Image (cartoon, rainbow, N blue to C red):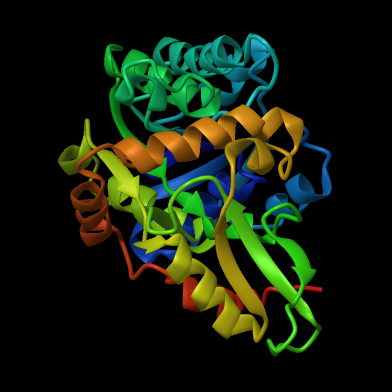
Length: 320
């Protein structure tokens, strides 16, 4: 008899990636049936999920505990994630949402919990960088889950290639006289850290399921483990060069003052990105052993991971 796998965020990037990977992996598809948990069962994306075989769509909202109790009753394994909360109590609010999911999982006798976590810049920096609340909340939730009477494992994603599609990722300026490119513009990736800072990246849509799928295929082996999930490390200079080659545009990386960088992102993201990049430059994305941790996760992933070049080929970037 198939085990029920409940997936939070099933209509989003991470949860949707896990759902599709399980459905398309013959071994996992024969082991699990999927219960997609979403706040809005009437949305177009939820209706589309209902059309997939072996997928049940149910309502579950972290602000409605009773709905979570219903959604997780009879479930064997849960893939859980929390969405960022912004505002003065953002860390506590997101942590409490994760805590609610974990507590209900224990109460409803779920056997295994896979949580989408992140490293804590606050902890790694000894309190120097405190603005990355979306990371710190998930790291705090991971520690809480590790103390619960439930088997668990963790997925911690690197930066998503999908982020380069955001309108604020690049700025543009007129190309200097004598330079050549198609549209007379130079596209600038402006950040306040060194161009040689090396960060891990992942195609979340195509590859999240390869890490979570490894846990689902061998839960005993990976119990208690954290998959520091990245395909490869890229310096900002190399990142810009690859995008330039793929798009045929002039794309450069430029180190700028932190206050100038803050002006390039939405205000609610200013502290998150400013402190986040600073911490990662100084201490590493996953800490001092980042490259070894990412290499282990990649070696244990259930399938080949996607490079930036492959992502851009499948998802052409339009710089206009």
